[in-house]
Image (cartoon, rainbow over all chains, first blue to last red):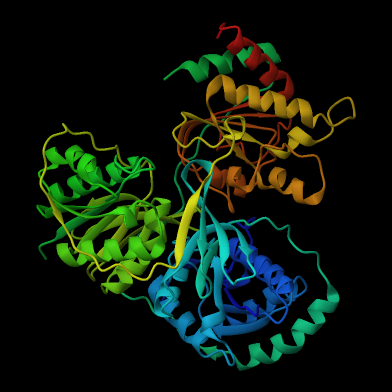
Length: 268
Length: 343
């Protein structure tokens, strides 16, 4: 079965970076945003690894990675990501950050996907993270799917099992640590991935070199796509103010700590 | 602008009672309608809305429903069609819905279909000159208050941000909204639930217990005691009915061939790539903290930590009490006290 898997993945500041909001000319932004080390959005990265794994198990399949961000940041992130799995990059030169509007972002991404040469939408599996580490709205992928006319969508996906008849089983996260199990008759479909089950692939310089042959030209040709806000206004943007006064207890025995904890747990 | 509010609701796994998150959305809808002097409509998606509508009798709201066997289970195509029909029937300017897995799957699509906008993970609503919604960005690290002028505006509410609606059950009149079923290509075949022993994620628990990677590191005797760690943690969960969270590093160890706690999955993970659950209390153990761990604790009320590292940066200013101690010894003693009823 030949699958055409398109993975939508943004870039996000490295999780270990300290973030500070500032006011920019077009709304809120992060201080020194362009200087912060960036990574591929974590849940979208899971989607990419699952896509590569699925493509490997279905010969003839192809994986595209569609990513919107400033060219320079995309190039920086691709230096790492390209060494992990094989894909063809579809870069869109646009603004960085989580304060943009999901609706306009989705429209831009949907247009880019429809313009991919050779993409057959009847074979399409649209992958991405179920939420991003930036805006974290969990709606962009659905909006793209809707724009592409895909009527089967799954969110919080941890597993997909393709069957020989083209149908597939999907496990989606639902409340209470459970998974909902569904069977879809076949492509096209949208899958917003949670963590999945695959470990992060090891860096493979050979894959990296092969990927970079197409990634660099694609980045050079990336079309600019300014993503403007669509009626979304920010009344306030701030860091959480809550700062606790921690009591550090160094001189209690385990027995004493246990008794204090039991009392604490029993208190309303 | 005169606002009209639609609260979308759905039933829980039983198929008859409204899900708790839906009842919370109703509270939010009633409060917002009162603030704005707006009309309130409640839409129900269910196999059978009788019990749900009875619960809502005292809301004085207009009740509309899409029901039938096709809507018994959560599924994108049918839920989207149902919610779209409810929206077209109610013609709201504001749509509130629970951020449940069922509605989080379809709400953006419905907003798109009726020409609206959507914002999710809303934690608070306020009415000033405009309607303001509070939500977090960058995985609960930056808080923002947003507004929109365009309508309809969909707002998905995070669970636990409003009290669940409780009203006196009674007879209620429900308008059935017709819906044209789409082609159904997906069959929901069931739920996969961890066995009782392994059901460690309990959203309604009062306390979150977070296990860090230290549980599977070498102990003072130079050996790893992952079996003992597992027993202690499960014993603690059994005694306290707490929910279990984990750091990413501990969950990831399974994929790296290192000792693991067999009952932990990525679904237990809290933080940047995990969940940010809401519980009244939290106890973290053996966590080496960085900002990602703090993110997972954003919505925990009263926080305590047990750590061997007195200089652990994340606990300072984040936890209320930090015990510098060996979690193996402390949790063993806690379990003993709880089992003996001496607590």
